Length: 492
Image 1 (cartoon, rainbow, N blue to C red):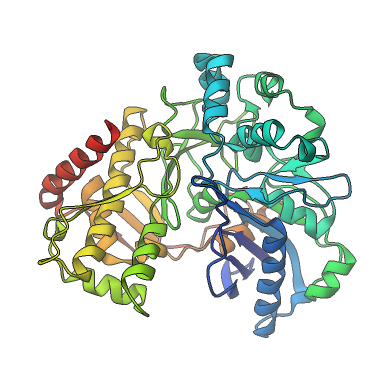
Image 2: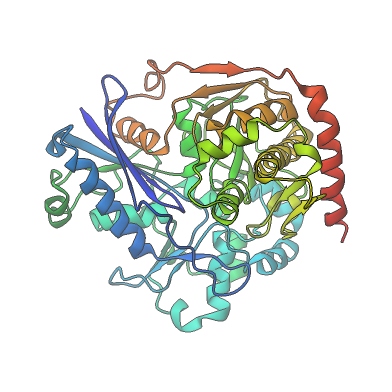
């Protein structure tokens, strides 16, 4: 059986088709080739067009089909992974009312902070497990407060993956996992949060029907099927945020298992069976893909906004046509410590692990007579690795102590320099896998339709290898200096 997986990223859309029996990817495609625009109308804002996402999803599927490596008519289910925390608004005719306010947008931080205090910090953390911050509920409150004309026309609010599923099927659903990442879900009551909806004055009719992550979220409309050469009526059977989906794709499903990802943003994601939360909400806890009311599986998430986006910025700003592989090779020729340069990578909106501060990105001890491109390349990757260590220490304060971390050999983890710095700064071995969000979404689709199970979906997956910490002492001094630079900025 063939399964289609879609990964709705910030930079592009990737799709993959897998064979459910072999669990192997048959074909993949990405669209567009250049990175998608993020619209920043004001500092700290970040928006994208949902209709752009939908157009890019269709183009990626058409390109994948054009490779002639499978019969599109044999695809039996669709799974969707998506950028988390975004807000999509539709009217009663399923028309988009405004651009999506996406994950790294900071405009609602103050609104979320006021809700945190008004509802009660202890109550919010013990029941929602997170402060409202700049998550989806607070973004909706921002629209209500600042764009009342748009707010009054809203029929449904949704997360990005809910929107793409709706475009396939015409049906609108969501899940506990999605609602929890928007800070709409009360884990103690196992229901929509009366406190959040009541404080913000939201009509509960704005919330789509709630279904399990692995379930029938709607069937493919005939007109869309015809355009994409797919079979009409095949179901969308899985929707999950990109980080829970990344964990699924690495078979991180049980308490104590931990995944990491270093794409546009950086994430460490561990599974717990307890309603755990950080007193300062610097890390966040959401319902994992296999969470149920009777069998708790919570994803404890550390998110760093400014990771791969900084590496990309350096590539675009300091080079002309240099590839990432060439950057990695140049960085490998520089000793640990980057000849003294220290890079603080936080330049992509408010950072939750820094108490929602937006301190920007900083380069320290840059000597114009000494330092060259390669020093900067390495310093950036070391700075990103050190930000992971800083966040992992917060997770350790909250009881998450990984013995091994699983990661896909992709994005920054495809760089030996970054992987070495990550492993030695954090002091934790990393198992590397062939890993892809769209493949994970396809596997999720197979689980959702019953072709695969959580127990057998990864039976044929093997690690590519394990990287052990061997240079911890060399990195310790550099990390302590880096941490001192960071904390000096936090005091300002």
